[in-house]
Image (cartoon, rainbow, N blue to C red):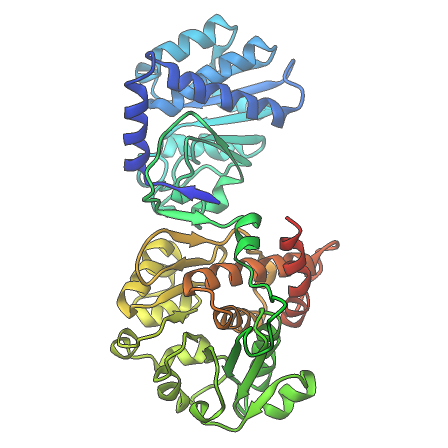
Length: 475
């Protein structure tokens, strides 16, 4: 699992470690890891042209010491000093001793660079880049760009981008991931991530985390020799309407592939559902009369027909609310439930729930998902370029790493709702079900779009869920 810590926690760990090490040793560890990563990206160091964008903080020192290592291997290294009077003295001396130079013409050197190292701003930076730094960052985009610790101009703690920022091809971060490296919009600026272990001892109170294959494989529900369809869990689906029967079909398609033993469908689209999935159990309703379930999914495509919402929320099983169902939510009603509730809005729906604008949600995704969870006393899954999951009881927010732009297609969210509701029915806690559902959903979309990257449909995503499940299980 990738675990991300706040700036304050990382800095405290760094201070504790530096107190036990010789002066400068920690920076040398970071610079060594940075230099190795740069060398791997270059492929051939000797004769390459490297430009360092050097700010006044420790990230600038890391860049200078890494540049010295590359210069000793034959690279032509030039340092652009944004604050010459405050550049790291030891790092600058090391660069010059290794044959590197201070740039006399930054734009000309950037135009010829094979690799640019972004050491402009450290993890404590707030707001966007200043105009001169923004101009250099823009010029650097013609080359491979490696950011030191995180791209300059993004917020390390929140993932927010308040102005101009460096767009990196790769980011080499030290000691621990920072939340901004896992959460959009900043994640888009970071490129490929590489963590360099510098010996930090970190506490358990992480801010964010991202599941990896092994984590998901461990959480996947598996039938045993004593399993039957009811012991594996039954998920109830309240979805679709005369206007949107396809939403019911798509939600059921995800639910059937989510690990539960059976799916009960309640709603007006039974004929359409049975035509596609004859294994579905159907009932005219109300949900409380449909038979025993271990979870409910309600909302996809129900339109203005919210009569079933009270019936579902009165149940004593986990409930996932999505799409149209979100319009009928009462925070007090949700908070008063004895069983878990999982809300799965996209940014527009989240904005309506929070009484704010969509742009505000998209710009502050970490804050928004936490506020949703707190206001409703529920687990919140905020869909988007990086889907985020915040637990009802707090704790680290989970950022899904498998998302892809191919999921921006009609009906894909209905598939996710059914899939995640099915995972709830198997007994997974809401926080885990949401994170695993998002992971499999994103992976399925990636597999469906491979190898030619052609546009895909929501039905393609549902059809690839089995392959995603098997792919995770092999790791």
